[in-house]
Amino acid sequence: MLKLTKLSVTGFLCALLLGGCAQQATKAPEPIKIKFVVVSMFEIGDVEGDQAGEFQLWKERADLDTVLPFKNSPHDIYLNEETGVLGIITGIGTAYSAGTAMALGMDPRFDLTDAYWLVAGIAGIDPEDASIGSAAWAEYLVDGDLGHQIDMREVPEDWEIGIFPRHTRKPYDPNKPEPTFEMLQLNSELSNWAFELTKDAELPDMEGLKETRSLYTEHPNAQKPPFVLKGDQLAAMRFWHGEILNDWANKWVDYWTDGKGEFVTSAMEDTGTFLSLSLLDNLGKVDKDRVMVLRTGSNYTMPPPGVTAVDNLLAENDGYAGLDAALESAYIVGSEVMEEILTNWDTYQDRIPSVADLP
Image 1 (cartoon, one colour):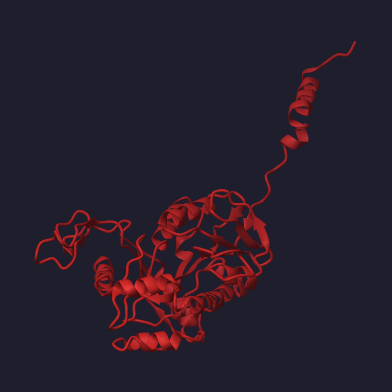
Image 2 (tube, helix red, strand yellow; image 1 turned 135 degrees about the vertical axis):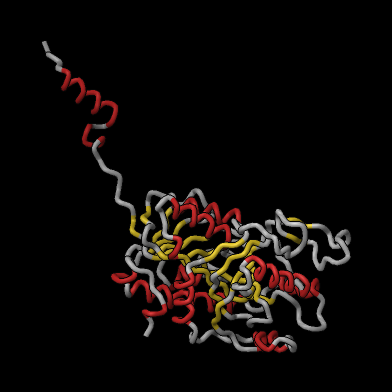
């Protein structure tokens, strides 16, 4: 008669229910160590081989050939396991970007604690500051959605616009609250380093750019060939356009940054992305001081003289005049920063670069 001990019964149950106790003791795989994350917002078609959106040049040129499913995002994750570079496409708008960044940061497959983050995308660009194809490194991200709004047909006579901050009584009220989501500041030392490293980069001056630039006869910076600059971003879910709203964007950024910021680019997503990364920083998942935002001008934020705002906006919707140049500029400038960090990873894994590191 077979005698069953307590130990043999336990072993039998392990084998029956779990496929063996050895499986029970198997450890989860070690997370993949990521050195650099490229954050794009949209792709036009496929991720390679057709008209490029924001991600395609990174996919092809950084050899992001390992594809991992990412069910919490509109797109898969792309990875170069040898270099430690990971690329994502968040989807368009603050909700998508915030959700995708949070999902990636919480994904147990990756160790992002030392990773540098580069948001690299196209944007509207203020002709007061730069030309299409130019690349702007941001330090301040200002939200253009949070606030109150009254239609201009109903505002008091002395108001220049119907948009004003929450917890205030009028546009640009000096008695404003401390900003929460209204203004987010990136690591200024890292932003300055990235600018100084890339400020002399040669950007593509593609066919057709000069013709578009020449229309901006009242804006000398808009007529220059593409160049690299420092400039801050207003993030808003509406694709706004025109001289009046361009003036508002400049004043809104100036207002929330106490005059320290300079509106240069308009986009949608980056306040949401950085807010999620800041919350992940609180959990020890990422380092928010390693986040950079690079936006390149695909179109101007206001029309040239003699063209109405609506006509110019509708024309741009048929195809951004500076799209291809902006995509190339984003890769040229952003990849220079990426390569510098990867080449000197032994240094920059433990210490964030600063201007003092440059020759």
